[in-house]
Image 1 (tube, rainbow, N blue to C red):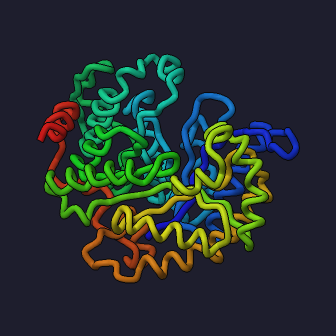
Image 2: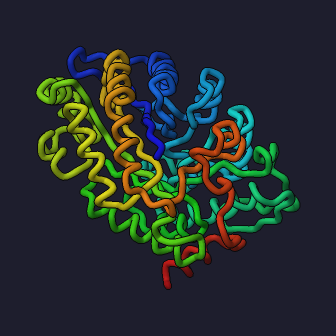
Length: 386
């Protein structure tokens, strides 16, 4: 199992002071959080991609490239990279460049994005979000695997014998997770290519994500990549931890009540009851997280969102100490118990696996089973119709 944190990079005012970090402070805080995550023994740091205030991480590869130079071991990822409003050629080249700079410590979560105004800012239409996600990934998949690509599609100008540069490190593309909160088509796409599926698993009841993950596992097996149990699943989550549960609830309540994402709705207690949000002692966070395997089966990556809603940097760093020292070591041990040997190990680039003795490696991160088609829309449409 891999454990990590992901940040949406919001500059939300702290409800206790009424003040928000400046953009400069928030960007620097994200770097400090990533460095701290490595120090406390976490496996992954991921940043969102946002182009609308109050969020700051509009250029994930710039941020992650800087973090790569400040770290040695932690995997750098995204949550998410917008496959709909970014040119797949630029994604191919940017993340291959980052992969070289980080010596293979890179993967990415692709998503279509749900913020409607962002689409026209980049010349697209949110009503075409699914077709864009399908076609753009079909091209990206080929750009990382073929030296010269001929391409003609619906959403971009044709390509003739185009070579994306640099080529992926050692010929192995970054591992791709397809992220979704609500789109079954994305789960089908992930299963068709044999990539990973990341279920954000934060704002909706577990039954919704059980359906998406089951659909992905079914498509993964149907398309010849392995058994349902070998599919590669990542989960999101949210936690706020203090030594005593009463202190955690008391301290986090004003942040919850005023958070743009879930404030002014159900109470904190109601939200914790119906979603994966965990606010309490280390033991309570451990117990709630261990339930995820009961709901979704064995999986490969668990991420936590812990720096949102205006929480001060000092508080976030304290949270990471508790997560790294008291929560994750127990989760590693407990998740390992009874884990079948047939379960696919977490994704690692072969260059990274070689430096770690193969203990936490897997098949080559770029391997996807049977080759995908030229027309990704046809592939997903066919798979969904089966």
